[in-house]
Figure 1 (cartoon, rainbow, N blue to C red):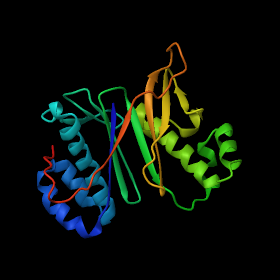
Figure 2: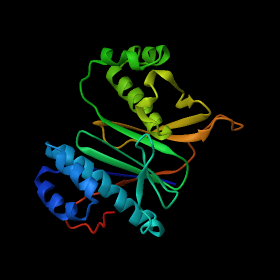
Figure 3: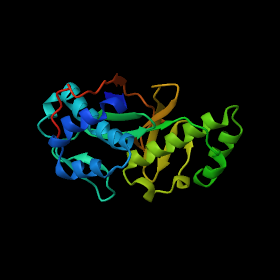
Figure 4: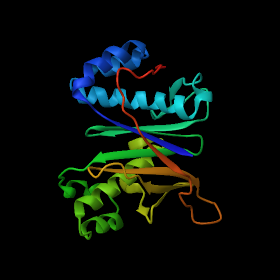
Length: 230
């Protein structure tokens, strides 16, 4: 089962959140938060970490004492002492975290806003670009493809070292080397577009499907929450 946790920023609660959680953050992460000049950027980063901790404690409590985070050579975070998978994304006023005890996955959320889609043509395959420009609502189609491709490279774990144009999303599936990534749209808010990508083995007998159950959890994060940061 896949659990998705999301929360919205709150400017009025910002100082209280920092006072509550900065002291219990690991030093390196605390320094990262303090480097942000904009309160919203700092809070989005903090919310992602709080959602991860909250999700583990509420849905996978057996792993609450083994949450040591390490990083791959491509800077993808993972748990060093357990096999849970997680991924974090944020945009506009929303932070989101996905956690599962299954296959590798990635999630991307984007706040819908006016965009010059021509600026992104070079990142899409000819098929993808044609789908965008021929859609009745071009911006909506753009955001769907953009979040799909971002979710795929996050699930793969190598990030932008894989050029976005080097693979194609078609019928909610993308193939990279020996793996297939199955995509599913996550409906959170009319002002956001969100997709999750799940890694499947490419050589499975049938066309891969997104058959895992996805559970949405909206979380109100406040300074009263009992969260033990690691």
